[in-house]
Image 1 (cartoon, protein in one colour):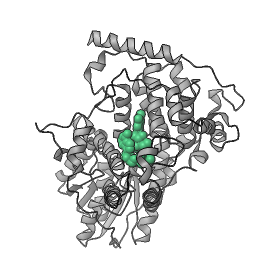
Image 2: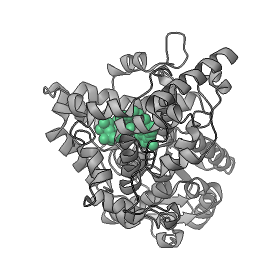
Image 3: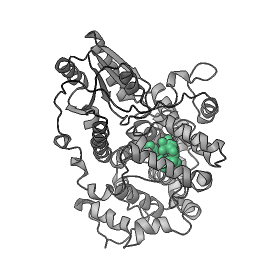
Image 4: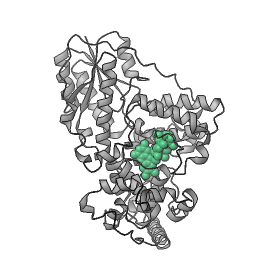
Length: 466
Ligand code: FAD
């Protein structure tokens, strides 16, 4: 009898535990991707990018003599239909670690097991299962550094090789057409623009990793904070859809480090930030919605407001912030330092609820990740784990001096009328924003000094209340 492999954010064949386990049985394997309500609920850019990943992955499987069966609906219903149609008696998948994914999978597993189906979840897109990393008192790590020190020296199994072929069933079930899912519908604004920046699929992800190891890892520690330098791996996009496994990246970077690559350790530390985000979300399932530090429930965040709208449009009058927001809109991504600066400005200078920013990033980022995004916002806002204390407020002007001294980043996204990105930004924005390339650049919404003082006062008031 065939085994169904239910693919989700794990669109690869190398180092894929569930796929390897299924192929090892020698039984026919039916790969399936379901456009489920969780996928429907994604923001415009990640949903569109996910679709590109699925389309690409279908070709990868076809080259191995297999297929990717596409179905839309509630996963349990779809899987039950497929089991009936194919006579499969087992369903395997890679474990999810985000809150919604865990809830979905638990319900599916219980339903299938109730039907007598062999429902197996296998190791997913983390280095270590979250329940295997604990502090001395058996709880989870509330700060990053001891987490890093604990996992740093841990044994990590070798990567699993990609199967050369995937045994096919005698008869394939019907598949829907991905175009009918209209995953790019919400992306009318900038599909043609953002598509210049995407790097889809397993082979391309591996190429990205190789380029990083060949050219950038040695200078990673020194250059990673400069948004104009091609200093980072840009693998977050591929991690988001499982086009490369964190274990593959870890082993490759670790190997480079042992051969003397200077920035290796620092890069591994960043990779472990991703890991930490998933462990955190696993242990604190409300991470995407509720302040991790409960005393922050007493903070008077402003709800969505006009200034926040200016922030989304890259029209705050603060060049580092606006350049970052335009980078996000024109390219679907944003450099890590710029994410911190833009997020700090919204939550501190504009005192706007971090969840307003979370939602905009979730709309626009092609590397949107439920755990890293939630943790990133909470970390910057001050209510997250290992928080930079609230009084450490990023000053966009000083940050610009330090990390964009030549202003090349700001010019590229803001002031150089002929830059590809600036043109792309204006080409992509909706008419309703009322901004054209001729619109004069605005004055700052708040003075940096006043915004800082008001933020600190709001923080003190919260301390008084909590
Ligand atoms: P590299 O510097 O090459 O790092 C390698 C890998 O380590 C990354 O691909 C990523 O998986 C991981 N990593 C690096 N920094 C972080 C970090 N601070 N937190 C978690 N993982 C990290 N990352 C996402 O993948 N998706 C998001 O939706 C997301 N939202 C964010 C929101 C805010 C407000 C902030 C401050 C950060 C957010 N990050 C998010 C983390 C970080 O900005 C990106 O992972 C990073 O910019 C990706 O670039 P890179 O792949 O070149 O990273």
